[in-house]
Image 1 (tube, helix red, strand yellow):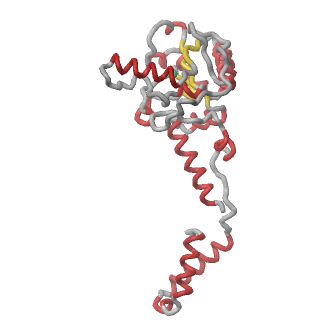
Image 2 (cartoon, helix red, strand yellow):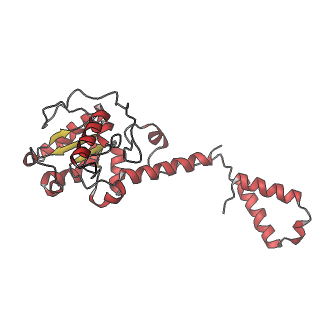
Image 3 (cartoon, helix red, strand yellow):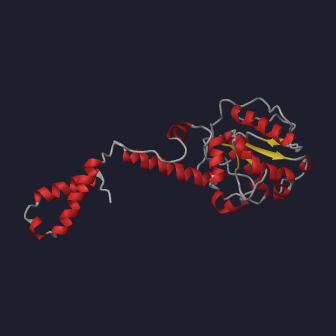
Length: 258
Ligand SMILES: [Zn+2]
């Protein structure tokens, strides 16, 4: 068992201040304590080691792993700086669809790969401003007699405000309400299988509803970067779980340093 440096200090002070009390100590315990001191000396606390599979630098600097949900609201003034004017791919929307540049480029690659497999995907809804979300939320509330039924995300909690989220559908889904049945289609299955290799995750998975507090949305992709997406796939993590995990790794690492 390792002793923390602070614990060791307290112990040494106590030990030095109470020489008489040492007589009453069990000698075998004293042996353990001396061993502990030796171990501490041979393993300086400054030699901390990063063992988490994703680099410390990426986790501390990536803008693409941002978490937006009810407990982590984005600022009402948050607007990504590098939004595209409009997506340059197959899409279903009268309005321009915006995404952060890196996510847009990844989406083009994803759509191209799907097309090579004979599957045509359509972008539907990308970046949504705080104000748009706010209007949508309060309109829904009004329609629903003031009750939040979870259908429209609370302002600041929408993944769409990150500029990294995108709703994707197939031709059969055009003009229809998005449903979970999309996950059963060839297109939905292809996305669930392949999106990770292009840096996207299925943000709201069927068996993570209790954690995300959002119902399964097989059409909602979220860009996080290839390495993180593949790691999340391999470990079957929601963005909430991944965030908790990496923050814990960073906190432990930083607490171990001097
Ligand atoms: Zn969505």
